[in-house]
Picture (cartoon, rainbow, N blue to C red):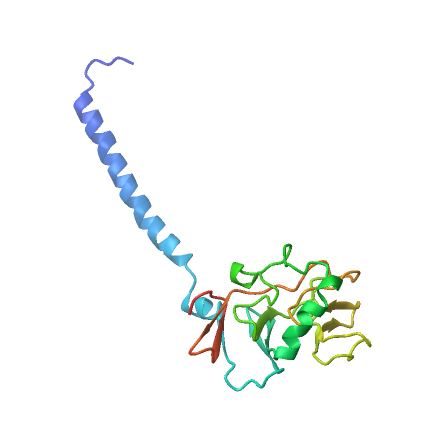
Amino acid sequence: MSEQGVDKGKRRFLTAATTVVGAVGAGFVAVPFIKNMSPSEAVKAAATTEADISKMDPGMQLTVLWQGKPVAIVRRTPEMLATLDKVAGELADPNSSDSVQPAYAKNKYRSRKPEYLVMLSICTHLGCVPLYKPKPGEVTPDWQGGYFCPCHGSKYDLAGRVFKNVPAPRNMDIPPYALFDGDKKVLIGKDQA
């Protein structure tokens, strides 16, 4: 085909106009599509769970649901906290090196404040819900208190750290959370209130 008789200026104008119209059209299609992918307000609200812990007695456990999973909140006594050092030599991961927890919970208490444990109450073996057994001697004669999964015999201390030689491979998970309102409430699912 010959280039004679072709108006190159008109060709460039038509090419530019087609490109602009195409870009604007793509924008009109993309914006609602991308906006539709944002989570709704109901989904955002389900992403966090708030719990009132102001009336918890020392030693008490409160269980709440967060994203459909049980979260144990325990108000530990000084005696309960003292057991954490006693059992450290019997634990598979006493320093929580291979555990799932936020950086602020990577300590022997596995919590923001030693008094409050906030933990997913799910056995890391097969996903059972371990029983809260806080009293010494409640499971075995040398039991110091903690969590016991009767399904397959996994045992955890009062910080959710797993004992050696049990089916569970690692410590129970700690979700992101924040204490607020003078430590009277816990917001689970978000680091800062």
